[in-house]
Length: 432
Image 1 (cartoon, helix red, strand yellow):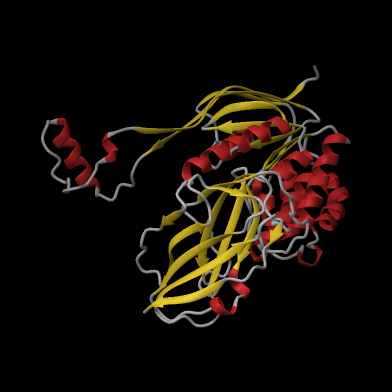
Image 2: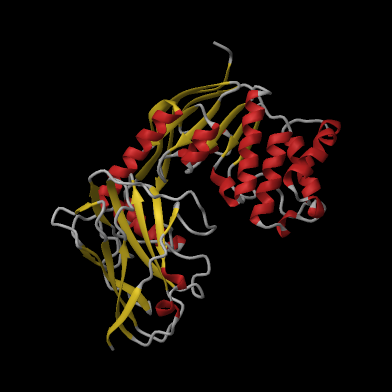
């Protein structure tokens, strides 16, 4: 076996959790003196929990043992909070482990967060040389690579502008170009690439692939995009609750990850045909109920029979341009299609205060056999220009009997899934 690039032995990271102290120094001394003498805390308040008395520890990583070889392309996947970013920060020497040992052979270039490694007051040009110096490169070495970096990043027009003026996309493009072209032995890339557009993401994946295959560098890549992971990585590590759950071929890691997500979403979804959402205060539009009709008691549906989703929603003030987004998820994660009511006149017209109902029909011979979760949300673009998606609850249903899969390969930017359902919504006012 060739010499390792990174070796991780018994790695653990623990954070101590506590509350922010809002008291004065005198109050702290007074409270400590009272507790030491066995008296009640004179500064305690009714209903207040004093978390400072209890040491709460959060184990971000526990007993991690890994070895990375030169030339590998390794993906790290897992749910939010699994420990992916913490592991990368430790590997990049941004934070130190609580226990364990890490051995690194070579120079590391990290791209973890927008702006990491860049000084906001310096220009793009100056930051390129700064990063090269941090990596231990001579000025003439950086100069040889400079034109390639600028060309790859596409920010040549702004290269002499302070990076604090850059958009997040420009930041990431230049940062990735620096990390990829200054010849580090190890590249560590977090989900930060999601900031870039699809074309640049594809360009980055191609570059990471080439520096690994052609130049024998180790690439460690964290992403929630299973397509990106499967395209780039031959080996993947699945983290779960700060531990390594799987380390092996990428296809097996992704399958296990999706199975975990599916299981979690099935637990959160209800098998009731109708669900009720809690009333939210200080919101002038919200969904009250969400349901399916024409399904049997077990939530099974023949593939060739149409069925209908119904919602009731409440408007407390005059409002227009409502957007209702119905999403159908398959296998617990994949958004199969979205049905968005932003082009429907009934939603775009001004709503007077009142309770409304809306319904949309899903045609037969549309969904393939399988298990699905339906989720719905509502927002107003003027109030939420980037959209919101926090469905809270979902309805679990199944399609049975073999049928046609009419999933389209077309894609509309800004819409989720691979299918666009143009079936019109129908809106009726119930009462005022």
